[in-house]
Structures are given as structure tokens and as C-alpha cells.
Length: 483
Ligand code: SF4
Image 1 (cartoon, rainbow, N blue to C red):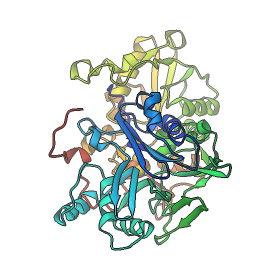
Image 2: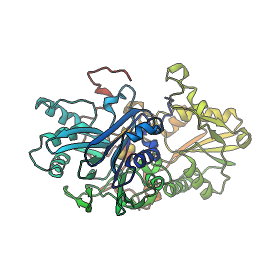
Image 3: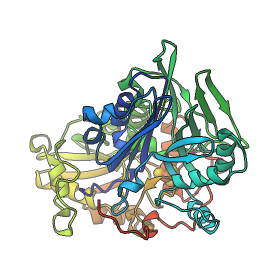
Image 4: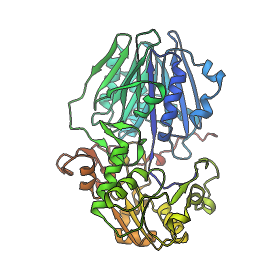
């Protein structure tokens, strides 16, 4: 995989109830959510009698493009999952959805996010005799459901979610229900959609983002609320709220980078949010320049907002090669640095002799920013100024986003001036945290009760880090497997 020096989502989920060809619809939904995870994918269906499952490493298209595979997934109910994982963890037994058989029947589970007490719970469950088959957090849910003393599946699920701490969205499928769960603070997204049902009545879908509705012809109904469990069956949608209500803390980085720009999250268009962030950034950190150039693709809407607000021309001064496969070259140190040029090239005609403002969404380690600035200079730019549509990423995320450990984050170790020097930019500026909140329609950041999770910028972690902040990389499985 080419090191793109970005934070990465760790999963996307999709669910379908009473939908003809539920496996094909789920595959399409997962395809729209591919940006949330590219390492592995899986679908579990139910045909009214039995469950059917297919999981594989790689992209949705690589695994669900085969007619035979799709024919092996009959039924009008399904859940699916896309997984992003750090290297070494991507083995088939860690691919979701997980499936388990209980005394009440079968249950398939897929989740996006991270349980911050998963290791603690896991150790306790192992001591009680639970035999874990994977290193995934989701399996903790399965064991908690298995040992619950409640008799029906919903009560067992409530029992389980009350014991976990973390930021997660979960989809689950039983023979009788499709279930969606969002963590009490609503850090990770989950939405409910409606479509034409297989029986002529209503069909339902759950998805990480609204962009997955468009492709399957479903309409948006609403966000699943923070702390809500939605239970979908042939009678419709039932809602349970088992947690004490708390002010929500949706992940602000979804707006900055993770989500697809055509998604609407918590009532806000991601594309519009990014343009507003770019406009606010132009207000906060103006610069005399000839051209505003986005670092594609994620920097494009913010650069458009920046250009509109500053009245400076917007040009595609960097062109992205979309045909660079993620596994094009193995990530050896010798060739890792080539990654940037494989993916991006300077559009010399738009850059030469000009004072360029590059707009990007974030700086993680700084390796990519440094190479892009160098590439733009080599293409003849007179000056290169870097503007970042997010505050400095100074802290690791423990809520479902793959982040390097804190010591590797450039902003954790350096001032803005030092970062500008290391990256080689003539100037560098980040949007302020208050400016980010303003761009998202808030009056600013209320330190006593922030409207979003912004822990990777502020270090203000809204959910307990019970497991001692151990990145998941540090907890390898005892079993070495080949891919
Ligand atoms: S720490 Fe950052 S990336 Fe992680 S959930 Fe919070 S805002 Fe999102």
C-alpha cells in the first residue's frame, strides 16, 4: 500500500431488510462506502431459513463481482462490512461480519469504530472461558451477548452494549430482525434509509453514510440517534434508547476528511462543510498569491471555498493519477517515497512562476506534504504557501480511526513555524479550532461542552480510554496466519 500519510477510517457498515437481491444491494452499498475500508469486505444474508456468508480480502468489486458468489447469498435480508486494518491484522478470520450461533438462533455482527475497553472486557471474558476466534472488538459483543442471562436477543444486546465503552456504529442481523446501534455520544455515523420492499411494502437500509443510499435507490429517513438502538422487522422500525442521554460528540474529522463529499452527516452536507472550512481558513490566514491549488482529492472543496473567499483563481495545479492501485508496490522504505509521485503530479502550466497556495485537509506525519511542496517548487512555483483545512493533528485517535502513535504526529512535536520549515513551505497555517466550529455553524468551541469530538486536535477525549491508550497494533494475535 502506498503511504498517503492520512488518517484512515477503520470501517463502513451496511444493512438491508426486506429488499430483493439483498446481497447485490449490500454489495452496491459497500461499494459506495469503499473509502471507509479497502482491506477486506464481507456480506451475511438470511433467506428466511438459513444464513449465508461470503468474506474476502480486498475490495468489494474483487469479492462480489462474481455471479456464483452472489448466487450463494440468497435472501431479502443482509448486512455487510468494509474493513480498513493496519498491516499484519488483515487475515480472513478478522474479516466481518462475524457470525455466531446461540440458543436463540444465529447472529451476524459488523461494526465501525473502536471499543476503548475491549481489551479489558476481553481479558475478563477469556478468564470466564470464552474462546476468541479473532482479534476484533466486534467479537467482544458476540461473547457478551452469549453469556448474558437475558432470554431474548434484544435484551441480551442491550446488556452487551451497556458493558462496552467506545465509539461505534453496529449493524446486526438475526433471523427476525435487522438491528442498528450507535454509541451514546454518536461519535461514529449511522443512518436509516427506506426503499421499495421485496414484498411490495417498505424495505429498509442502514448505512455508515448517505452516499450509500443513492446507489441503491433508497431515500434518507434520518440519522440513527446517538445511543439509539433501531430494530427493524416486518412491522417496521422500533427505537430503544437504553442509555442516559448525553450531549452528542460527532467526529468532526468526518467533515474534514473521512466522509465522502456527497454525504450528508447530521444534517450537514460534507461538501458544503468543506467549502465553508476553506472560506474560514482564507479569512484567518490570507496570503498574497496568484493561484489556489488543492491537494487532490480531499483538499478540493476546501480549496474552492478558500479561492471563492479570497478572490484568487482556483486551478488544478496538481493532478491525481486514479489508476494507482493500493497494492501497486510493496511498502519498502526505499520506494515508499515514490508513492507521492505515483499518485500526484504537478500541472506545470498552472504553477510555473506563480505564488501558489496549496490547500490540504490535514498533516499527519508530514511526509506527503513535504514531497508535494517540493514537487510544486520543482515545477517552477515562485512561492509555495500551505493552508490546512483542519487544526494541527496533535493527538492520536482511539475511536475507530487508524492514527500513528502520538510521537509520530508532526504537530505533536513541532510548532507551526517548525513544521513550515520541515515541510519546506514559505508559510504554513491551519484553521483554528474555533474557526472550524464556526465553519460548521457553531458560535465557536464551547470548552465546557464541545459540540463535536475533536480529541485529535485538542486532546479532550470524550470517552474513557480504559484500555490505557494502547494502539491496536500493539496487541497482535498469538496466531501467525498467511493472507
Ligand atoms: S479523535 Fe479525531 S478522528 Fe477520532 S473520533 Fe475524535 S475527532 Fe474523529
